[in-house]
Image 1: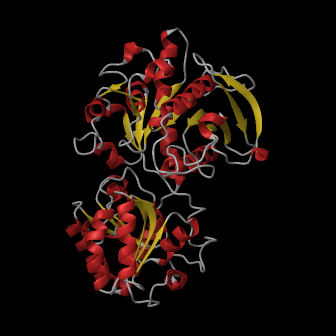
Image 2: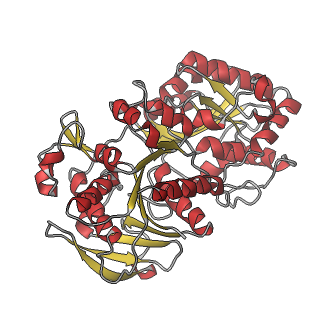
Image 3: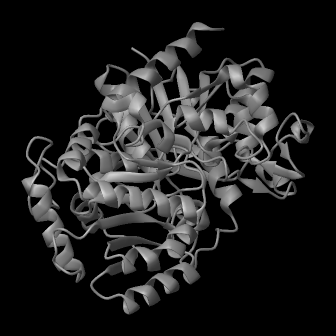
Amino acid sequence: MLRVLFVLSEMVPYSKTGGLADVGGALPLALQQLGDDIRVLVPWYGRPDLNEMHRICSVNVPYTHEAAEIWITTNRPQVYFLRYPAYYERGGGPYQNTLGQDWPDNPRRFALLNRVAVELAQGRVAGLDWRPDLVHVHDWQTGLIPYLLELETRVGNTRPATLFTIHNLAYQGRFDPAIMTELHMPGADFHWQGTELYGAFSFMKAGLVYSDRLSTVSPTYAQEIQTDAFGMGLQGLLQQRAGQLSGILNGVDEVHWNPRADPYLPAHYHARNLVGKSQCKAQLQQHLGLEAQADFFLLGMISRLVDQKGIDMVLEVLPDLLQRGMQVAILGSGEKHYETRLQELAAIHPGRLAVHIGFDEGLSHRIEAGADAFLMPSRFEPCGLNQMYSLRYGTLPIVHQTGGLADTVVDAGDIARDYERNGFVFSIAHSDDLHHAVLRAAALFQQPAAWQRLQQQAMAGNYSWEHSALAYQRLYQQILARP
């Protein structure tokens, strides 16, 4: 039985800004079900309620004057909540304030998380008689942990093995090097082969350099980040560490995302009986004020409204798609000018375009079930989850061929992979290519038998976390087998 400490900055159901939180909520549980002893450390941002957990100890952080607390729940896997009110109990989100601006003290906030994680990893927290074999850390917010554990070995201490998983290389935790003094970081390692990245002190770079092994969230993204186009300035380092870099596709929560039993849906269905999906479409059209026509091709999109997600390409093609009689339902938030333009178009095209700015969990499930196809034209997408939700719900994804989208969606026209075909793929991130892919999908929608066959193939895929957890378990064993 492996003892593994997960360290994350967010975790469903307690906090979430993106897919990292979904991984935090699902992968530890899947690994525990395979027999491993998994503990998770995450900041406490106000959930769960204090009366649902209890305080077990305080932690005096080395080289600082900070004393934090660790609280736990009785759930499994065991979750350790790091409580430090001045850093984590505030309005806004885990990383930004209510205006969408990064918290200026982010380096201090997450350095504290990293320091406490090291104390746990080294078995130095009173009241916790447990020490991991391996520490699995995620994204820049935990990137100092492998480095701090490496420093432990320089003073003669042993340490657990480390695995650093990249969820999105674009976010690198880069800060003015003056912060290093306050964070008690050694200046000797601030150079191009250490923690320095283009003149900045980088949490991400520290994780990439000092972790025993690296992974990312899809096989294709593992290759892409070694290129100039996707490497975000770190491609040289990732090429050097290619032998220690693995790509493991994320899974989906098959209990939470299950069209057979989804509590958010007005009707349930499965691959052999899609009648309930038609009922979901009719209800979605009614709820969003769209014209209630079963034969209208209804496109769904749930996304952050930012350039990475290709919303600018969607805006370019929307007028023509709506003119052709298609319907579009969009749920998301992001850059204000995109939100405004979408709302303007919705006002011009009532009954055809519905836009909901913000996030609504129930509506996201109803769009996945009620739409005929799902738009996901991301310029880059490390893994992506919505395309896998769409596949499970028989809502055929229309995606750009990148990252995890390329690893999960096989184009309907790919004759060589006939029995794997499950969606529509375009290879160049340009509005013309997106437009052509949507028109191909709309044309096939007019052939009910062919469309249903593609839906059934999509729904037959295995997107479970168990498959991903087995891959991580094998990777853990490989890491621990080496000195």
